[in-house]
Length: 187
Image (cartoon, rainbow, N blue to C red; front, side):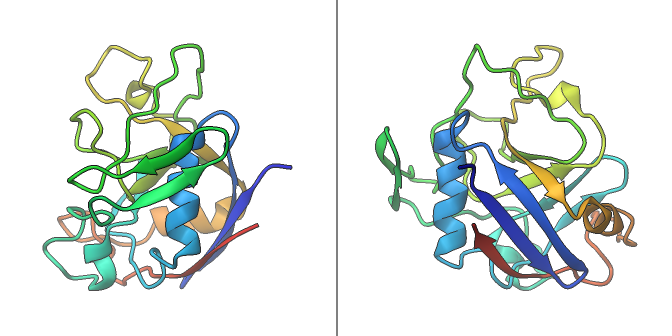
């Protein structure tokens, strides 16, 4: 049975179907962090209309932090992936890139995608929700160096995701009225 995540925010809740079978390393990283309460109290730190909503930086507990968007999980922490084993986050708190050559999950509207710095193995806790089909971010699209693997898709509450995407932002794409994660529940 597929796992889902319900994300409760100050603007409402939405549910995401998690791709545990197709993208187990990335998905179980998210599940591990969610079950440990990592996302509770964090804020959406980057919202770009008709593009995406980004979330998951521990520095965003303070919605006005200049460091929001620069953090991740603690280095050297581990999590379990069924059928794979124990994964250890690297010195930057990041996980191994999961870019299966035969899988073509595109950054379509409503998909959850791993954020990263553009460097190899640099995704950790931050992800974004696409509010436009951003095929140029697909790891199998070679038109840009961006490689962002999709690991879930909003199954209900897309109206909440769209409302967050339309919230007024400052010049740094940060919501003027902070949008906070109250909790993430894995089902």
